[in-house]
Image 1 (tube, rainbow, N blue to C red):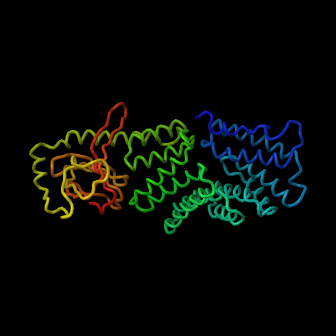
Image 2 (cartoon, helix red, strand yellow):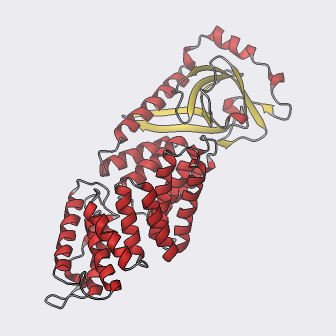
Image 3 (cartoon, helix red, strand yellow):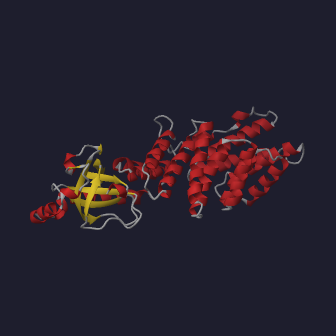
Length: 411
């Protein structure tokens, strides 16, 4: 799959034209659009796939040079020819000032050509002129609603949000909506689903990591971005989905996803993520199984210090081992926080705790906006979510009990 990605879709030889036949505008247009579509399936700039694609773009440029369409004909015909040249130049992963110049001419000759507007927007984006890029995509939409402009705007507005905190919330909301609109036009478009997954993931952090439902929506979108049982060749899809799995504490799926991303694109920080997650889960496993190295007398003292009468009257106090997998309604767990494990900015935050029945387990908390919980405090976990964590890292079988709380209001 790795060797075929991009190149497999780039088989745009003279299948569009019969050999020795007269070049037609339609055949060259189809050939260039196939190359542009192929560009969407090449994910690494210095890959053999990109080199092959750029070579095909040069061949197509020679065919365009052999015509006089850019200099003769109606304004509409000249605009289309200029659009082809600009699209071919814009296939390069780097900003090309000639592409900007040509595409600017194209939209002047033929203002209704949405492919020219979208290519010009892409060109401005590479130039880091985000405002001009947005104007181009919006202009394309004003001419005709189309999937490409919606996808580009979904991605672009998230980029703008990162440097515009005052409007970030609105921009991320619009990013989600643009992706949804693109899907409504073509439910089978994998890139639109990928855009929606990224938008939901961004939305999750925009809400201070307090709405885990956005993580589940992102996960579903990423799953829809893969056709059937064929793994995507997009390394960023695997990497971002692995991050979602990590936040949801599906650790084996996260480890596998990071590794898959690294197989496709070794330049991604996949190895650091695998090491970080492996070390975290391994440490939690070790500490839970030795009950945080608490001596029997210390453990008994901690158990005695927790007063069941302080728990909410409507909830029954139970031990961690009395819970079932998933959310446990109408019960609570009283525990003493022994040690914080995560860094302050980690998602989720992890702690080692002991409950009033003497059970030691890991506690994960989502949506903490401050520096987290203080050690040695007594906590009451309201309707906690039980997860039996199981994964393998460096041939080590990891298995420990974890209670998950989705938001500080449940503590």
